Length: 293
Image (cartoon, rainbow, N blue to C red; front, top):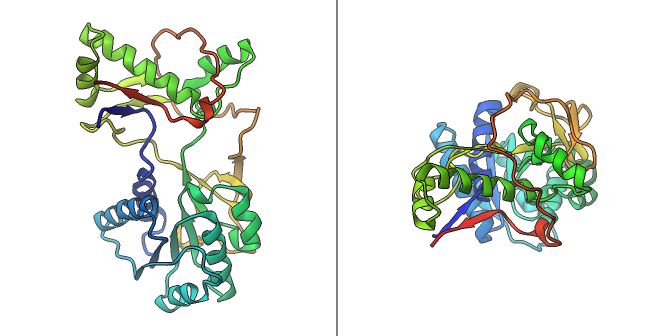
């Protein structure tokens, strides 16, 4: 594996979800539902590992067939198991259908899933059944205090650092700091230094990498609630969301031209800003990565 990635692995969402469950829903009975796809399998593997580390064991851990006409049997299994929290690993289509089936069965279980559910289509298909759904996802770095200086440089040039732009910027910052630390521009030496876990300061916050080139302890993904809004806080187990009284939410997750000025994070010292890059027409479609041979 010769890529060092400035964004978390997709299955890091499983780890983050397990941590969130352990912290906010420690007494909930848990059901895990997966569509058996490779991505979902990786996600629930990390979820299971995280739950096991917290001494939490699901009361139901099963799979479902994508594209089924009806998921009443899945919903029945969940209700019979007495699950109070349901983790859905699959697409928004099946996620919406299962959420509706659960509510149709009278289940008030907290629904949670990965960023495959973070789409308007999920809420459109599920309707009221989607209210209160928690979704892990990578926070928009344009909201970070540490990114404000660089964002202002983009604003001055008339560009917007959307998609993976700021993560690509952070990847270059990490490369520069590794080159300065090693006194070399040799790719192998830079990769070795980064894979050793040395911490770098970037526009998206501090980073360090493991021996595989994956982020160590990536920032916890956020959680989306009603209609794609992000919660100020996630309700405790004793106050699970119910459909008539959703918790308080703020900050829309959808791309926006406005950015929050509020931040509790302490500013970090960044290396000198790089020249403002021009947006590539496909930059929002490509993940940030550094490749070393």
